[in-house]
Image (cartoon, rainbow, N blue to C red; front, top):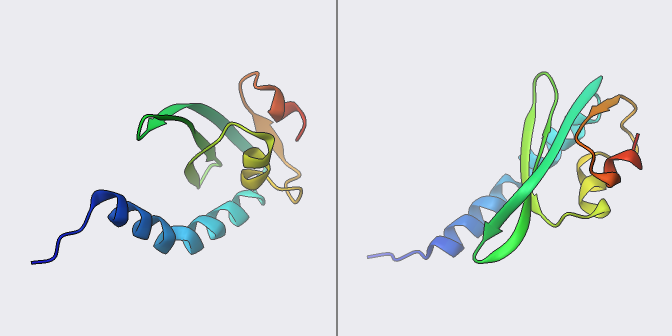
Amino acid sequence: MLIVRHEDFFAEAGLACRPVEEELLEQLQQADVLHLDETAWYEWGWLCWRWVATSNTIAVFLIGRRTKQMLLHIVTTAFVGGVVSDGYGAYAKII
């Protein structure tokens, strides 16, 4: 019988999805308008942030830190459209 720990399963699934994530993030850069938000997310007792970036055809959810670097991973310098967001200060730096 094969026993798989949940942590290992999710880690492997995340790695397998990496090419899809990168492709979706690349496609988001072509959007006319992006809607961005982040909210607190606890994972294994650690405070992380759940990020969402949506266009009219794509939605990407990521878990990470609440940093400018994370935001720039989602919205690269290739993006020239508009951004709809709340008042998080890092968003102002990309608009």
